[in-house]
Image 1 (cartoon, rainbow, N blue to C red):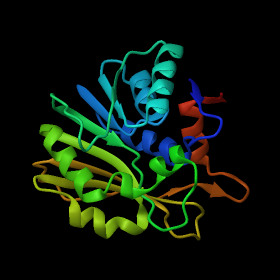
Image 2 (image 1 turned 90 degrees about the vertical axis):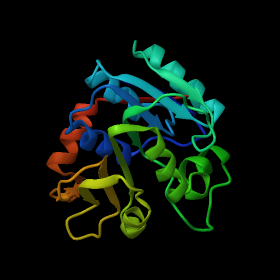
Image 3 (image 1 turned 90 degrees about the horizontal axis):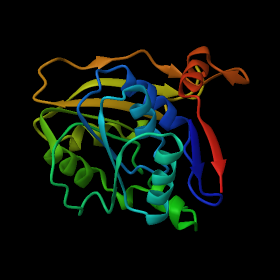
Image 4 (image 1 turned 135 degrees about the horizontal axis):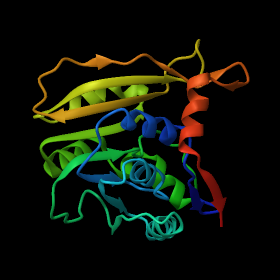
Amino acid sequence: MILYQPENGYCYNSDTMFLYDFISKFNIKGDVLEVGGGCGVLGLLLKRDFPKISLSIIEKQKIMAEFIKKNIKENALKAEVIEGDFLTAEINKKFDFIVSNPPFYKGTLKSENEIIKIARYEEYLPIKEFFEKVNTLLKERGEFIFCYDAKRIDDIVKYMPVPLKITDIRFMHPRLNKKATLVMVRAKRHAKSMVFIHPPLIGFEGESYSEEAAKIYKKAATKSVKI
């Protein structure tokens, strides 16, 4: 898959690749919404692999929405692009799945690049309001699958609104002896099952990708073109 991205803006990274793989393990079907599409990589990979889904992507930055449209056309895929702020946009439908690699970093040391700031920092999509809006847009048995800073797992649990219930969690560690930096979460409305903790995903072994990480990149098969 060829993905055009801005030369001087936010580019997708391993977090999105690992989230794509995590989502792919579940029975993705029906109406799917990606929140904060960036260049569209997550949603378009899912559309490529699950062609029967009806995909919508919402993106607040006009420049990135244009990249999504370009990438849809380049890869001969079909998806609706919604330009607007997820928290305030009027979306007049409900979804079977909502997926997202949202901005989740806190702190004061921020990029001066506006595109990067909006893509990375939580103030542009606060976790409590984000979760609450997701909850209103899911169908009765809808699912919410996303990734977040692993250190924020307490906030994830705290702000997950009823009747959404966490059903699956997987942590990603950069290396075997390093702390987890990313957590991938699946939540489902009205779920009754207990939480399944998946085996950890290890990013690197020595100087190379781990065997699993290498397989994920191979499956995604993306090629980035900066313009």
